[in-house]
Image 1 (cartoon, rainbow, N blue to C red):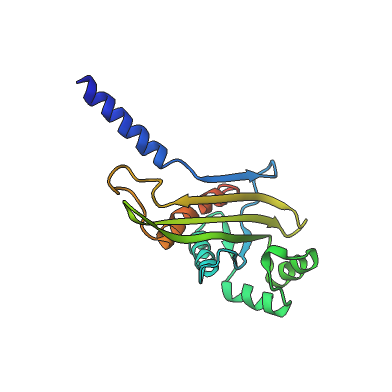
Image 2 (cartoon, helix red, strand yellow):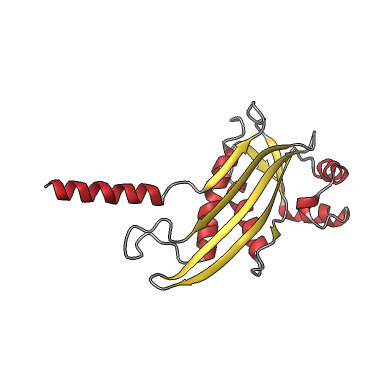
Length: 194
């Protein structure tokens, strides 16, 4: 009986540890951000070397934040047109003047900017394939040009494994979606309710 209880407790501890957050976020302002704000998701820069990693992360954030109830997300087509119009080639190196121009054109309050650092699937002797995804992002206030929130997230597909591959995530795309869900929830929590 004691042995069974001890095994159960160890299994529960492993499950909780496997589900532990792997995102570090810091809010840089004391007050909640205003409700009904307009946010643009700029294309994520791909530093990983994996084809389409930046587009995948951008699409994930657009999809997950598009359903937010505390703010609205600018249409991606309008954002891309604005980036082309002002010849903004890198969202991570956007200047204050470019922020002002884009915010005025699209009536924006905040910009979500990010970089994909790692997006890979590695061979594992026991699991077959283990995906690894790492990215960082920040939320800029268009009014001041200041960063109001930053986050770094990284994950491995085997972190949620309980035993014998159960609970493991097998593809980088699925892992990226799991991680962006957590980040999108954090972003939604920054804003006041409508």
